[in-house]
Amino acid sequence: MGPGAVTKADRLAELYRAESARVVNLAYALTGDRALAEDLMQEAFLKVGSRLRRVAPDDFGAYLRTTVVNLARSHHRRTFVRRKHAGEVEHQHVTRQRIYEEGAGVSDTRDMLWRALQSLPARQREAVVCRFFMDMSEQETARTLGVGVGTVKSSVSRGLQALRGIVDVDEVQER
Amino acid sequence: MNTNIEDEVAVMLRERTADIPPVYEPSDELLRRTRKRRTRKLVGVNALGALMLAGAIAGVGSLASQPEDQVGVTSTEVPVQSCFPGVDAPATRPITDPRLASMELWTQGAEADAVFAPRGGICSLANNPEDTVSMSVAVEQGGNAGGVCILHMRSGTAERVLRECELPTSPADEHTRDGDDLVRFTLANGVVGATLTYGTEVMTVSCAQGGPIDAIACDAIVDDYIARNRRAITGTQTAPSTTPTSTPDAPFVVPTIGCGVEFGSGTVNYRDPQRDLAEHPVDYEWGETPPDLADFAAFTTDETHVMTVLGRSEWSCRAVEGASGGTSLDIGPADADAPVHLSVDWLPHGPGLALACQYFATPALVAEAGANGEQCIPSEAAGRTLIPSGDAVVYFDDPDGTHGIAVLQVEGELDPEDTISVLTCKPGVGLTVADCETIVGEWSSRNRSDAP
Image (cartoon, rainbow over all chains, first blue to last red; front, top):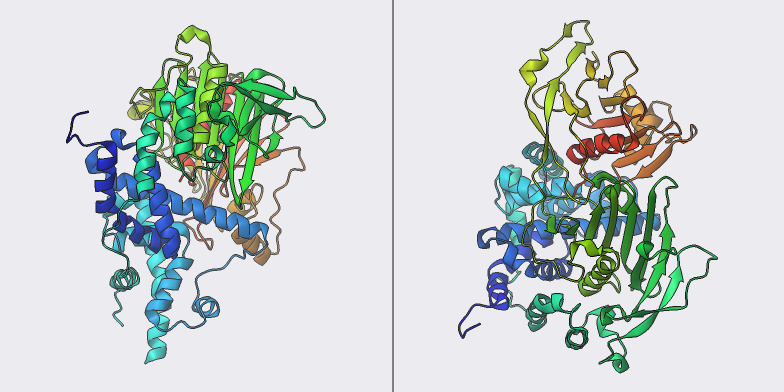
């Protein structure tokens, strides 16, 4: 390799600077945990770093985001299994009451919205975050999540419906 | 507050992430590991280089923890454990790959049915007397677990590999074919492995990172399994995989046959099968024995292929769409009971709920059944063996040989968009056990809802 040639590490470093913040944003929105989000970003780069030659440059960002979504899911699965074994899992739906109970000190509607988002079923949360935070189209969201466009539509619809219920109730009480 | 919830979500998330730096700098360790990973395929050839590499990689559990006195040693011995309780195994086994030095060999007696794993693991067997040997070893460290699974089948399909080793699939999976007999894979969830195929015989090893099992340990385990089991006829026993392909072979294709649909209102819509003749791709992803689909066809009830199941091309089919919304599809010889049956019903529709409760007892199902004064307890009273694969998929085998899969599509509370689907296939007239595996596996690949 001659001087000035772009090495794999050089390319990874460039991609890291270009994509890592966006990936942390996505992971944080999906997990609600900043430190975990940064860990998942690192893990994602480690995973895809070994596949740089196989991923087209234009596809790298999408590939990375799919990897982060999968890593976040794996984290949630492991957490769920641990809690399940510990007898801590109950089937609960997103309700205003639950948000209040779990979030002592919730200060305003946006805090409540944040907690409600974290309480959504994983697929709904992923779909809402990809569509309205990452500004992905329905097709991009479907590819990222590995589901059909129809599933994206229904997941977004259900997720927003649950979130809207939280906000609407809050507005009524503020008046 | 603005009542546009989409905007509110976007604003809220931007506020929440406002303090995330716009640019992160890659750590030296990340870049070093990236550089090293490029050379790690040489490890199997150059053992000394591998050990030097291991020492250079800080924080990589299984290798960094090797005692210093092993540096420079190219041959050593590791403990051997028997996965059969109470059955002795040889005390040690010599190795030449230093990446295995901190591991032990779990064995069932045959070389083909043995796999390395970091020491301190827990081994479990799931042997099917017919033709399957599977063994998994889980290893935990610091509350984080990884695992290794091997599977040895005399006749196999991708579906069986998935079931036995609980491997999910995703479009982001990578498959690298190396010769006619070897496929290496890296699944989107990080699991790596390989499948060796000889005729109808299939051998698979998979490795999930976690605890003391890191990426390099997984590579070592997979490489070793291939080296011990790949047959010399390929002439590529020790060659690392370099084929840059990432997609499986072109899918198999079978013709599509339309089925008459009997509606609950009593009308019958017998469709002209010729109208539906089209090619139906049968997408087997990896690792399977290529099924013989020469006289198979895809039987379908409509152009959307919502209900599409493989069967013998000379067979006939009959679909029923009940007035209440439940649907079914039977496929079989014209003059015999249909060995292939698919039921799809919605929830919390009563019959759908009863069907789902035969296989699942999720909180939503239990709550709904309880509200109706019923119980939701999957029954194995008839000798049925239920094999869960994730929260929403159950494979099952009945004493009469019937093989099947139940897929639950439910998110949160039950609502009419949720469904329960159950496909059964009974070997016998015109179908072998392997045929049923193919039929169930093909349907599963299109209808599992839990792939990551």
